[in-house]
Length: 387
Image (cartoon, rainbow, N blue to C red; front, side, top):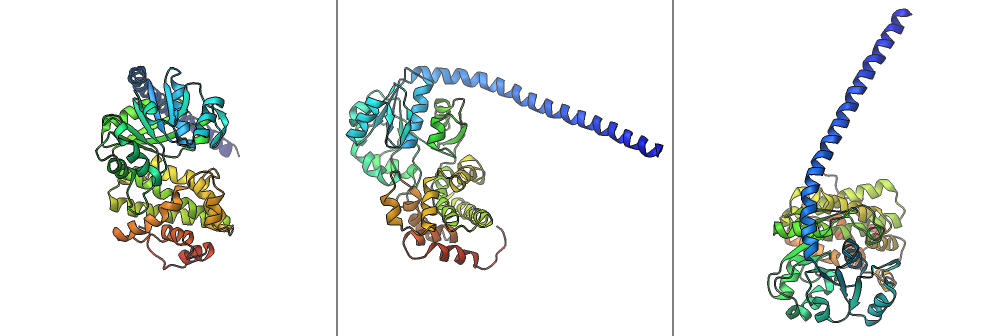
């Protein structure tokens, strides 16, 4: 008995020593990370301060929830900064200016005093240092073409719109220069980011992608704040395609929820959809690392699993038996996945990629297949090897 107690006591001492060593290693790793962060942060703060001192005005194209949230972030960051929303609706414009609220899209949140709205492109763009382009993809060509002569060629555009243009399959990186008839300095921002949570100053991460590394860095410094982390990337295709296709996948995830098929089905379908996005994106030239990061898997998880997602909500309502016409007629905000779904089918054909989940969404929206038929049709496809 004494031998057993001695062995137990010895084992406990050894375990205690091991635990102490492991705790010390954890602490050292954390402190090393924090030291690196402080050194990096000091340099970044100097760059950010220099940039923000130069920026005096930002123009936001569109008065939707996300454009308003991004404009609000900058207005909060610098109280002397003028943030102008360029809108088409005079009534909405008057409401924002009189009540300092976007009563249509973000009615519960006050806007900073240095945010105002106008319907005059000349007024909005005069002396602007940056443009935040938040016009829905399907309206972007018409909008930009109408005011292209008022946009200086050197004025950077920070595009936050996600989707693919119906009829052409173009990404925003193609839509913008085609609509303007020239190359323009552009950064594309995407990632898991609900406008409401940004208005609430909740921690968020986005990716700023541009072929111009310095411009991506500028966007990073411009938007970065205690509640918004901005990573940079040169993979414009990966960031854009993932941001567009995740909206279609979110509709599929919503359909599973609407049909009440359970969490197993939701996880399986979403995993299949992630693979399909990877297959197509890689064929189009995207990098794997992008699809595994915030602009890829991060945005997919948020859009597919959270009730705030407009596209997921469309899918839920389809699964419950509503028609797409009824859903769109009662919606105040754009669910880009509805338009993007048909484009995905053409891209799949062009790049010779099989995309059963994303194609099924297009067929449901077109009224060619019921939600239940689509799900069980996919479940009964031949068994395959993971790839």
